[in-house]
Every structure is written in C-alpha cells, then in structure tokens.
Image (tube, rainbow, N blue to C red; front, side):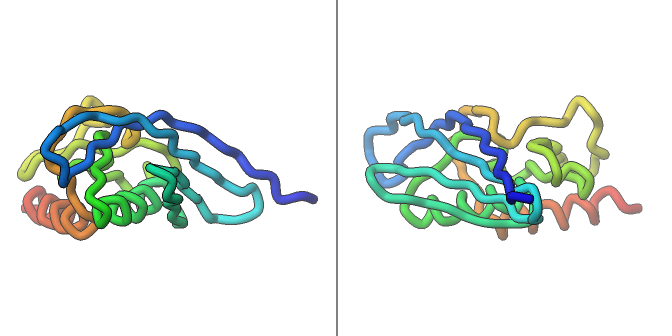
Length: 142
C-alpha cells in the first residue's frame, strides 16, 4: 500500500517585522500529512526562500515554522501566532486551539482555527506560548 499524502493549501498573511513600511503580504502554506506516519509537514516559500517544519501534530509543527520565520523577521498574522492561543491535547489532531485568559476556564466560544487571519502586531515564539499555557494551567488550578 502506498503512503498517500493529504495536502491542504492555506492562504496566510505575513508582515516583515524589520521593515518600516508595515505592508501585509500573502503566501500559501502547504500542510502535508502522510497516511502511514504520524508526521505533519508545513511548507512555504517567501521571497524565493523555502521554509518547512515537521512535527507530530498541527500546532507544534506550526509553532516550529513560525519560529523559523520569526528568525528571518517574518510574522504570520494568524491566531496560532498569538501568545495566549494553545490547543487542548485532543485538539492537536485538528487546526483548532483555545484563546486562553489567565484565571478563566476555556470554553467552546474560545475555540479558533490556528491558521485563520487575525490582525496582530506581536508575534510569540514557541517558548512564549508554552510558558503562557503553563502559567494559565497554574492560574485555573485552585
């Protein structure tokens, strides 16, 4: 049996962080998932340079490519770039995550698609998101 691949092409918006002119640019991110593996791959190309990351779920794979892009001063304008957006363990097989607020439980109305556009100017790193999530957990455990 062949190892078939599922590809989802998502249009994203990015901004060059070291540029005084804050224009938005559009790119396509290709999300690949092979049938017989647990590996997700996200790929894109910006200004002739290829970027990609691999991981076991959509969120962690996006976190990795987001950090690679941030090192090149590229911020992706989507919910997955926000410090307070993080999935529950069961959400990791989907594009969904919660918008978290310290001291408050997350509910269905707090669910967003990590790849959906949001007009933000602060772009968090993987470590910042993980720290926010850990602090949020502590804030809701009484």
